[in-house]
Image: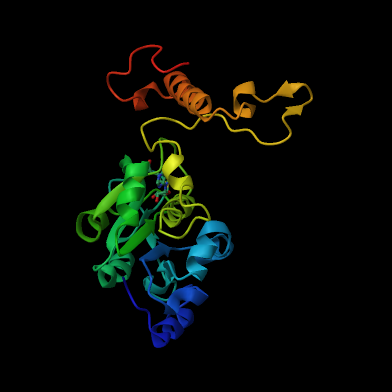
Length: 258
Ligand code: SAM
């Protein structure tokens, strides 16, 4: 837990960081985003679950503008790769200057070359007092950054984004919704995909029939035991069809598909 004084907040605002109005209360998690595009985060941090978590003081978010640590008159951040090759590489000096003062936080470099981020990863990060997410750009980041200023390298998936900002936003949302009190219904986070190794079942709401497409009758039956069995069967079937890699070991073919 971390108390942010009003003086600290004023300082943060001057430095272009974005603590929310609730940040002067005890915060469960401090998130720091290191980026060359601070504006990227402005509206997403104010909306939905993240906005409410910030407002409620469950979360503080600071955005560190890497350009402020750029080198020379042009605030240079990148240079050509040693050994040749396409594109530019983010230099170690600006990142060292930004990340050294954040040594008390758990610093994560977002990179397609990192370990896959899963729900278990987000559970682990949401339990930390302070998490820093470093957004790469260009061809990536000088390896000495990961070696000396980073606790973990994480990938959002087997695809290449233009920069780490979209990946960081995904992590911020995923972490924010895990914080106690962030979701309207606290049961929501417990009953979702990945919680027990299975994907979520199909969901339906009114109307019970649309263009002749009827909701499965069991959901309208009021029979809670049958509904629970149907849901479990759907989750198993879906997981088997779409993500067999997730199925817990020992799940026999056809088990639970009632
Ligand atoms: N040359 C890098 C490679 O082949 O692995 C890709 C660099 S990418 C164009 C620029 C930045 O976007 C990366 O440094 C990283 O911060 C971010 N990025 C792209 N894809 C990502 C992913 N799947 N997960 C996390 N970050 C990603």
